[in-house]
Length: 111
Image (cartoon, rainbow, N blue to C red; front, side, top):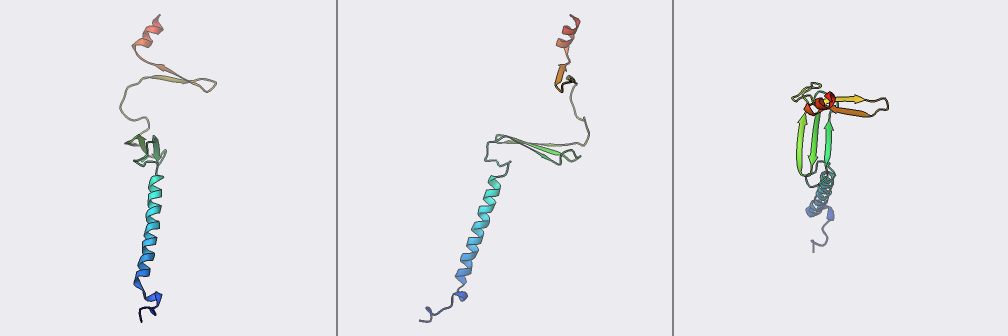
């Protein structure tokens, strides 16, 4: 009958049960943090994340549906490849007007 008189503090299975409870709480917290991440691959939201805004090592991460695109800044302002597409003018009322350049625009200006 010594088994019935055994002290609960000496029982090693009780500490293992407590560890299982702690791990379940940690796992639940990790799952919640993953679900709330804006770049979660399971969500279908469109998200844009800007890291280090305005600095030389700026990064832009764009998520559209399940596709994630990553852009890194080169540190040069106005740098890159491309062609001049037109001119933008800011009016007195704050509105912007874009005038495209090209053959269609030249024909309209000559008439």
